[in-house]
Amino acid sequence: MAPTVVGVCGDCGFDAEGLGPGDAVVAARSLARRWRELLDGVAAREDDGELLLTRRLDRGWSPLERAGHVTGVFEHTAEELLRVWEHEQPLLGEPGGDDAGRGLAVKRQRGDLLAQLAAAAERLARVIERYEGPDWDRAGV
Image (cartoon, rainbow, N blue to C red; front, side, top):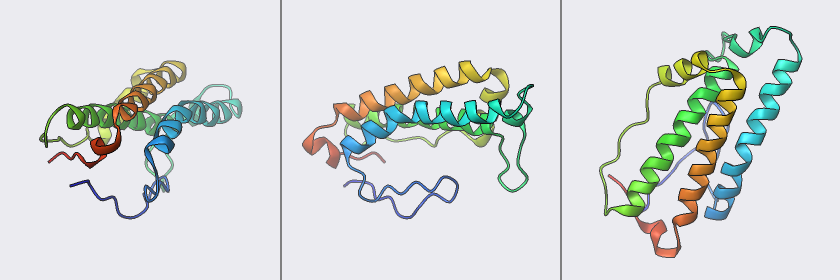
């Protein structure tokens, strides 16, 4: 039984309805470029990088913290999709907590974080590419 995704993400607006495998691969591969453009744009408005680490009161995370979180989500999702592809109904784990993304962002410079995000996005795209036809009916628990 395939998992059902309902609704739109309240944070980023992502809507999985109608997203096909080919779309997912293209989207994953384009995300590193999109994040680089976003963070470079923020960095261009300042000299010391403070905006990249500034938390907005209404959103809670700084741009670098959110990029760190997205990197962790990509890494986790690639691992879980690979487990589903390799095993029959594997037990899946929960993604790391919000603190994981915050810690990653604080420990890394923007360029390092973007390189890690790009590697995680590419790995996710490669795992998605492994799935063919009936593989999409596989599920984890």
